[in-house]
Image (cartoon, rainbow, N blue to C red; front, side, top):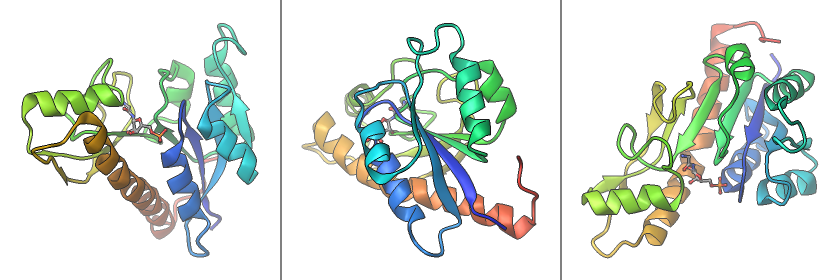
Length: 203
Ligand code: GAR
């Protein structure tokens, strides 16, 4: 069976894309990064994809006014994508992509959902919320993406201790390091389950 073809959607730095791509370079990886889509033409994510030869597309409301949903879906289809990973992707996916890839879109969030999720909960705001709540533990969550922010079924989480002198930046750094471990592990498990179950490729 061929490797699971993964698309990564990212808006900014793209460190999770890097972690996923590096893991995919291992000879026994069950997945490959087939496509990167970014809505921000100057993002680190798109630059990394171009530098490493991964097909990379800048698709946004500006490049495709009123047709972004269709444009993303046709890119996913053209690249025979099996699984979509949103990793720091700041746009909501449209109904066509969500319907075509139902249960095959996963998102990574930098807190232990259902805590500290929802609209506006991105990056620094998430870690500020964790510290303001006095939580003793945080860490990333990978979940199935559904229509509402951060509410889909949880696949995996990893715990990271919150230290007494943590700032949002120091906590973000440790959680991000945990994300870089968790995300490739989850994608590898999805790829392995597909192979173990002998599922046909969903093309
Ligand atoms: C990551 O911490 C990810 O969990 C977060 O954005 C960052 C992207 O970093 N996502 C959210 O906050 C979604 N609500 P990266 O571009 O370096 O991968």
